[in-house]
Length: 265
Image (cartoon, rainbow, N blue to C red):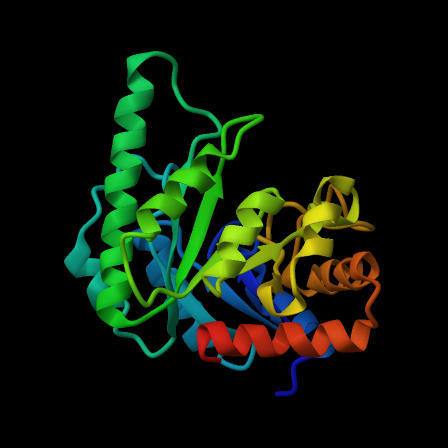
C-alpha cells in the first residue's frame, strides 16, 4: 500500500477504537493512512501486536511497554515484555518515560518518581538489548521542563539509542538537546488549535519531526471534541507545513521518510 501519511502513535488497542477497528481501518485505507499502535501495559501491548497482525496493511507496527502512570498496579515483568518484543510486528519499546504532571503531594511524590525512573531504566535496558527505538512519554509538571530534563539525564547514560519523544510539549531548549542526539519528536492535534507549539516547530528541522494523533485522544481541528482517529493525522501534517512555511508535499515526503528511518518501516 502507498501511504500518504503515517500516524506514528495511536491506540487502536483502546476503547472506543478497539470495538470499531474494522470500520476505522476501512476509512484509513480509503485515505492512504497507516499507523503504529502503541502499548501502555502488558495487555494492551499484546493487543497492539494482535491488531498489527490483523490489519498488516494499515497497522504498520506495534510497540510494547508500560506507561509511567497509566497502570500503576502492574509490576514490570522484563521477561514477558522481552517475549512480546520478539514479534516482527514490534517496531519500538514503549510508551515509557516520566510523567510528573499530576504527582501526589508530599513524600509520596518521591516514591512515585523513584518508581517511574526505575521503570524507565528497565525499558531502556530492553531497547538497548533488542536494538529497538524508544517511544517516549514525557510530561513535565506545570510551568517546568522537569520530566524532559530528568529523562534526558537518564538517557545520557546510554549509547546508541534511537528515541522519539511522543506528544512533544517541550520548549526550544529541550528540543535543541534532542536534535543534538539525532532523535525525533512528534506532534498531535493540539498544534491545530493552540499556538504554544509554533516556536518549537519553527525551530525543529523537518528531519527531526513526525506526526501522530494519540487517538482516541486529542482530536485536531476541525474534529476537536470528537473521538480522534488515526486518519486525522492529515490535519497535523497540514499544520506543521503551515507553521514551517513549507509545501504540504514536501512535509509529507520528509515525515514519511522519518517514520521509515526511525521505526524501520
